[in-house]
Image (cartoon, rainbow, N blue to C red):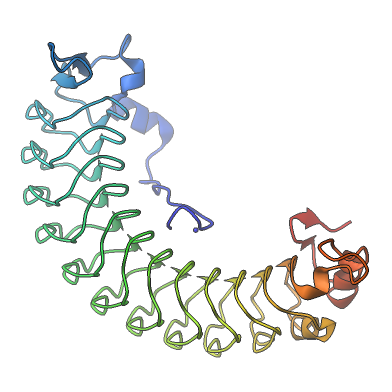
Length: 351
């Protein structure tokens, strides 16, 4: 869950090449291999900046450069890397985006966990397909005007309070804005190719602004301030929906989401399971930490023959009536009797 708290965290997709072909074409360089590597070196700066490192290029033909945790304070000396396609500068001390204008073949840029306060100087990176600016100090989305090839964009854990200046990024497939300060879902209408949208851990109060995103297969809205399930009618291709840790009181609004295979409603205020029996593709139903106290609620899940996993722990019906705070010793047996198709109850496989 985007956002650090959701299942299926981000991963870079395959480019279709065989491992041997990739190995032959790419010289992977990391700061953890300083003793043996050829291509890029990170060396100490003279005093008084003893803890700051400088990038020194040795192999200008490198395609894949990883300078993770290099104590780098400034992006510089990269001009000769004219063929580089992947550049990782994770967990450094960088305060400004600069020194990248010659990297016109760059496809992936990773600046996760630095000290950036502004998005700037990316105009020449027209081939960029993936940009990760997570865990920085950004307050505004800006400076992306020329990045029309972007497909994956990550802004996890910044200080962004508004979704803006991305309407032109019509090639986007994934947008990750978890753990920010966003209050309204807006300005997404042109991004019709998005398949994964992560907006968890913000300050959202209403599910809205999603009607044109008909290709969404994964939507994460965990840890917000929703009290009502709405605004999902157009998302007919949705397969995963994450709404845990909100204030939702009733299951509703899923009439058209017939492709759902994972539904996460954990840690809400829902008293009964309803309006889901038509979701015949559902395999995972997460409903722990709600207010369900009636075993009859499980009848709503019985028609879903391929349902494999349910999480129901810490609902009132999970509690032993004779030993408050402890699970009912008959809990698992009762769940299995009601839903014999299950393979897993909570975190434990069925026998």
